[in-house]
Length: 468
Image (cartoon, rainbow, N blue to C red; front, side, top):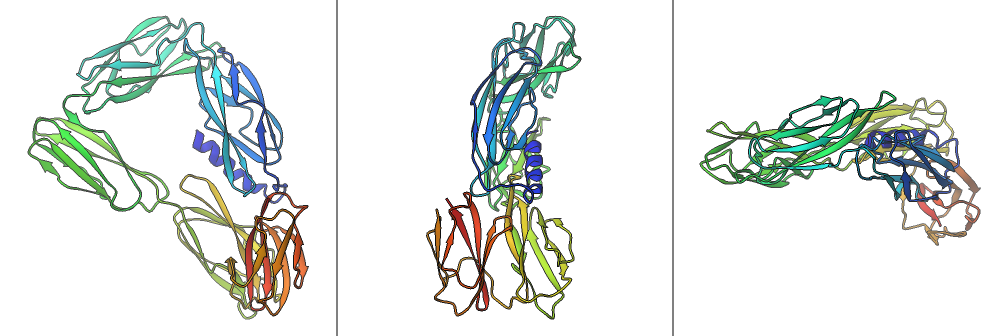
């Protein structure tokens, strides 16, 4: 739920970039400690004061907000399900916004506390012994319909549903781990409005004296990530059904021992998940879940500047990437709609007309390995027989940067300056100057990131400017 909400917010926001003012980026909330009553449908409010786009995520399923994203000031209504516990429960939700560097910035954590229920479960954590047949008891105080759902496979319940208060006995199989095994299930109660309220119960099973050290391994994305498992079963064992991206120091051993596993690289921007098994000749078979972290997302565009010469109507563009990406906001003289893709791609761009020296921008965006939206500007030009230098040039001197009011520019290394443009980070033209201009006044511009684009001699030089 958390990742889905955040992804929807991040996808929605870029749509509005061309129709709203995003230049100022501040946000405050009226309170970071929110109290709400135990009853179903209880509500409270808090205020967001902002001049930027913002969103809310990390929201548990027992909390509902009237909206999870917006722009500017808003009073949010927070509504809760009934607290199923006889003690207060808490949640931490996060507010983020578009900051002065045009990045999504999470900084404000809101603590939500729901008061205890008069009739609720007394326990949220249970303990069970390591051996098969060990059990624990859970007291159900509800006088309306209830049921147990999502019970781990290693637990059985004496009652899985009912319509009155009772005690439920939970019985475990043997813990295969040399460490505490944890699982969770939920008790859901039917409320007066025919909906359910849920209580999550955690069950911890004591570590076993024989078994394997862990039931789950998580490898780094890079090649050569190495992790070990201690196998202490008191007999010979074998490793089977190992995924192809893992190698092992041993596929079998005559007795107890440590087995090492080494990963090949994960080049994708999502976790990969597999399993293998540790088995003995006495019939024991323990499953081990193996995960590998995602690779760092990248987007490479060739050529880095889309420059149409007079005798060239079509450009071939090559995308090298391992994630979702897009090219949007093409100028109307290019015969292309917005382009979207995943991983590598090659496509053609064609121009409708030719106007020497013309320059525009498009936005290249991509989602990183954390599903966060990123973007950068790509220069699109006609007849620019040049070497476009992005963000830096040893021949162009500017100061100060960051700038508060007056930006000073030294063009002494160039023979001819035809034009100087100031662009927003989304490629919107803020101002344009014909010829060399030694000073540009940023005082009236909001705090943000801008681009200084200088058309000089045989090149276009682009510098990133921070307005503070």
